[in-house]
Length: 392
Image (cartoon, rainbow, N blue to C red; front, side):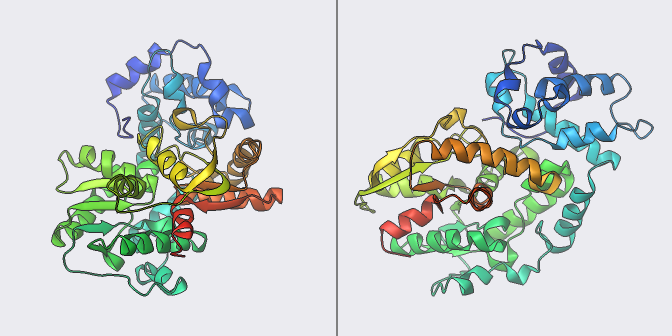
């Protein structure tokens, strides 16, 4: 899988000069679709970075154009430009190296500074008190929210699921499914810090290491064997980024909850009954293209629904919904424009229910549906599963 870590300056220079200027990346870029300027395209950004590198690449005495900074953060980090690149450039590495340099130079966007402050003070990007991490258990009337000293499985809820009301039912559904399966599981509760993905996206790699070390200590203190999460950003951070960031393997397995549910179905521990619902699925970029989890959601949906239909541009080729890369903090209007495009694709297949497996995607689609006055129902796939199992 591609990793979001920094690449060396020499590799960066080699990649920049390897760009064939073919423009394949323009057609599939969700940013360029909405802002058809060369400077907004991956190709244009590469050229811009190359020109700045010749001046010393954002060293203290080099002030990057504020338009350059804006363009670098006008990106969902969906990774599709890498997939179509004819010279296999590590575009994800380039975008994240650029963000890291911008962050270190102090020229980052103001909204990101507030997120960084929130993370430092409250250990979550929203600046909310840590004692609110378990509020979702009260709002959803979850009777069995385990906080054990030791367990086989830890459910790492993630900030967007824990703190955003629109996603509380996702956490509730996962908890209900784990209880239904009689798993030995626990929450980390107030001891859970942000996974560090927003820090990497903002360019603050050192703070990301600090957050990772804290969370690892909390998990290892509980003798966790498997970490489950329903958030693709948390999943990718734990599965790929943290081991590389820290230079060591983790002592526990990392899985997206859909991988776990699919495994339990295959083992015969969960017995779906297929409905006639006409339902579709949007692949979160970080779970599918960047995380490799593509088949499992479809196996699950086909087991629970005889009316499953695919959207255009799915799987590895999924069109981003606009919810990634901290775009909401930097340019929310652009996020909503990208979401509108993707929602129109989803509606074209005539599904009544749109499922996904990402709190950011779900939030983005809820906003898009509201703006378009659409009738399609937006559910996290685990919510749909819980409904079909009569656990909701």
